[in-house]
Length: 216
Image (tube, rainbow, N blue to C red; front, side, top):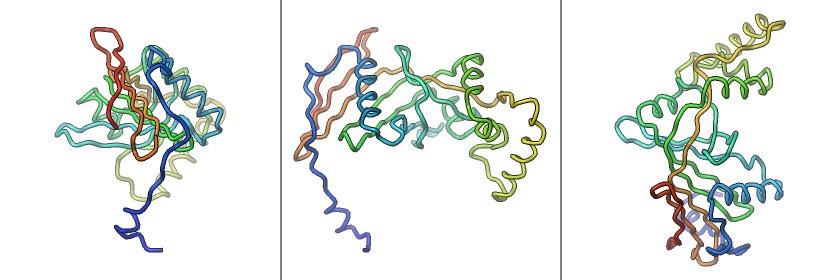
């Protein structure tokens, strides 16, 4: 099979598993997200907490990657990373981000926009201490987003830290921790036939969530 423009143009899936009416959606979009997330878990979707995180650099050029949701409550959506990574540097200059969850088995996506703040050191340490030791070591030794000479460089750093921390454990490095995306907009998207999708949008206006329907 050759991937041609014609092949791509003819790739189609007509969504038909569900619908979404304003009356189906909770008045609190965080509560609604938690409901949909539970549906994704119940459907046994592989890594339902996978989300696209989009940031922008100082020139306004967009940048996106996949990260994992590690907490959600009334304050917002949490994830953890290296503060010196490309996304960390971009968030320091421009503390706004967008998140996208896509659960194809349910024909659903959730789009989120908001401001971003660092989580406090205690919260980041508490989460870091729950991670498997191999993940802790990886967070310490990897100069995320920086050029490295080869894979061996990284593996040698891992072995060095393993030897040093065999009896002492691994402490959270200062350059690693959490962020919270505090939403100002959340959209719930349900696929429908003929691309006439349902889109229920929430915007935070003067401290209150306003719910509207968007055209697909």
